[in-house]
Amino acid sequence: MIRNLIVILGDQLSLEISSLEKIRKNEDKILMMEVSNEIEYVNHHRKKLVLLFSAMRHFADELKKNKFDVTYVEFNKSEKNFTMELNRQCKKFNPKSIKITHPSEYRVLNEVKKWEKLLGIPVTIIEDTRFFCKIDEFSDWAESRKELKMENFYQQMRKKYKILIDDKEKPIGGKWNYDVKNRKRLPKNHPEIPSPLICKPDKITKRVITQLNKKYTKHFGDLEPFWFATTKQDAVKSLDDFIKNRLEFFGPYEDAMKEKEKFLYHSVLSIYLNIGLLNPHEVIEKVLQKKDLPIESIEGFVRQILGWREYVRGIYWHFMPKYNQTNFFNAKNKIPNFYWDGKTKMNCMKNCIEQTKQEAYAHHIQRLMITGNFALIAGIEPKQVCDWYLSVYADAFEWVELPNTHGMILYADGGILGSKPYAASGNYINKMSDYCKNCEYDVKLKNGKNACPFNYLYWNFFLKNQNKLKKNPRLWTVFSTIKNMSEDKKKQIKDDSEKFLKTI
Image (cartoon, rainbow, N blue to C red):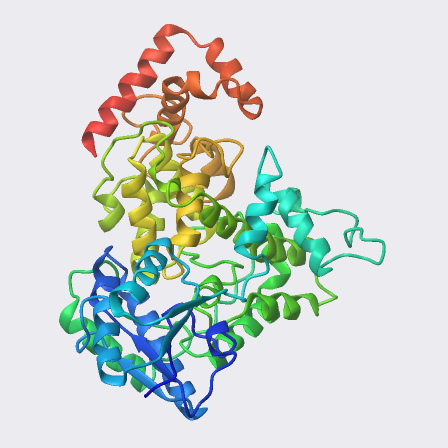
């Protein structure tokens, strides 16, 4: 009889995962499962599936090399869901108990909570220690405040872990936040930017690609070329490559966009962080060792991990399960087909969606201010947008995707996560990118069939929602402009918006 059956999920690929801390190699067994329900509940990008299954299989091999007893079940030999497959394995091994690190997604946690009753075996859920902030710790912080400002949370985390803090508990460099220096457009004739590290597929990865190519041909996205790291060793090499070649200019240009530049100075490390190949503690520790790099780049990168990543996880667990049921603007429009095929005359949307189709990746400003901005001002129903983001990005798990999309992008939570909707006209896109240069629409035109749709949709969004937003202090300039807008102008904006939305 097995003492403990330890279940390790596909985003828990770390030897430091809490479920392995007290394992007895000669008495306990590890179970890893690929199940069809996890593949099919949304239209996951095929590169994302390759990443997950290849990384899981590599991790299982690493566990076996470390003398752990591992049972690994591939998707073409498994039951439909975790519960059914676990039941099959329990009948085979008859464990005394089941242990699992706290799942990252609410729906998986719900499934796990039913195991003890269904299987008649004690189940222990162990806290996930990879994060800086515990779930209960965040809830205590949130309940003690009227407003949940990420900046306040971030400063608290900095102080607690003494990150970029001097002996007097003051921020190194004199400021907590260098966001104001992190909004530069990429200059013309900028030197060639080094690409992220390319990891060639090995036998395990090639086998996953072959298997998925046979069974999941209709899933979104290009399967090849596949270049992601699928082992801890290669993920660490990717981290080192970022620090050496791109971290220096990450800060100033983290909001920049450029046609045919897919990655710019971004790390593309969220993919590895979110499945466990990299630990956020080790990532920050390595970055902080670079004393010779600009503070705006170091702090900007640390803020993404210690601040924003921890904050959205806290929001997710504090407000679920009701969080995803909100729809502040009562948005009901259907997501356009071009979100899946990229067939649109809007060059910015076309570029970002085609890149997403190819790479299962787009950086945060492409997600927030292009595809997300359009979804917001076009009034697309939140669940459809959230399902799309969850499907198409390799780093998307609901705990991180939902608050970013539902709250930050769509403001569907009514301001729990963000202080204002991140709506923008074509002017912002033109300021931060070169997409408009090769677009069939004219970004300088505000109305008419040749005008950039972002321009009239932007104003239509605020006209339509002014009763809900006009008291927001961060939007006073918007509503001052609307107050002075003629009725003819308002009608033109509304007519152009309705005509365009009917075409998509």
